[in-house]
Length: 143
Ligand code: DGP
Image 1 (cartoon, rainbow, N blue to C red):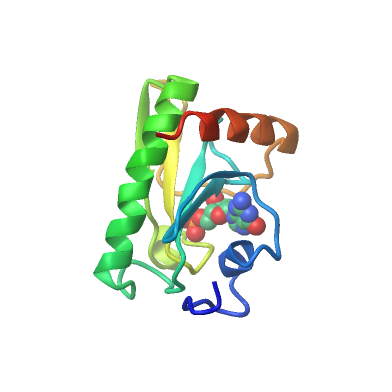
Image 2: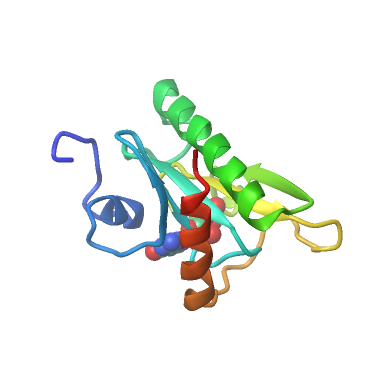
């Protein structure tokens, strides 16, 4: 981990260093996937590279590729676990896109026809017990 390009003050880098806990669903040498603590749907997960850069504009393409490849893997596990009517893969860049954490991350968001979700959403804390339980089920379905 010490040779990775991480930032001292970034909350997602702190998760990568184990300084802040997370509900992990997948990890390899390049990426970490964990549950969003402000989920907009049950099963809402995040995938981050083990490389600090603030958004897709500043991220080296190889890290973007690794992150989105892992997002596909997590999406398949979310589909198997939650059986949603659809899944959005979302990634915000800059305040106009309501990016709130400035470390590249991909949202894996289960969707339903009538869920009323919009592109920009407010951050509302989720039920940690329910998130933790879902994390274990999703992690078990990652292939
Ligand atoms: P965005 O707003 O697109 O930058 O997404 C950032 C997401 O990160 C947001 O949905 C809330 C989530 N988030 C913020 N802080 C934490 C944290 O400490 N742990 C976890 N698991 N998620 C976090």
